[in-house]
Image (tube, rainbow, N blue to C red; front, side, top):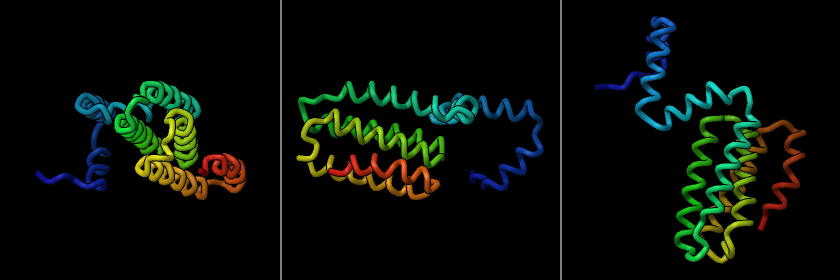
Amino acid sequence: METAGIAELKKKLDTLSQKGIKELCLRLAKYKKENKELLSYLLFYTDDEETYIHEIKEEMNTAFDEINQGSLHWAKKSIRKILRMVTKYIKYSGNKQTEAELLIYFCQQMKRSVKGFSNSPTLLNLYQRQVQRIEKAVRSLHEDLQYDYESIIAALEI
């Protein structure tokens, strides 16, 4: 079975009724958690990005509080898991300002929560890559917003 392209899917969706599209969306949401999460974002948070960011930050707080500080190995695994979660939520939003906000918060929490992460080359590289992602996202924003984020990014530098 070949997967249809986006253009073909658009044409087919144009031919369906509103009820048919609704049924398709609900069926998609049943089968994968990611589909359900994306549909939830599109339906409930598209117009209220601030609430979306706040809820993700709360989820990050919980995850960072659960990090096992006893072993650097387990801390690395937890950090990667949190980053995967954040990246997924950034992908749903597609908004560069949301990306910058969430990654800045991730880096701040990582700096605060993980003791001695600068001694681990793996965690240090991960942290520096996230700072680079923040800089890239901020460069695509309006000049006024770029100026606002400059001092925050400077505080993230190690």
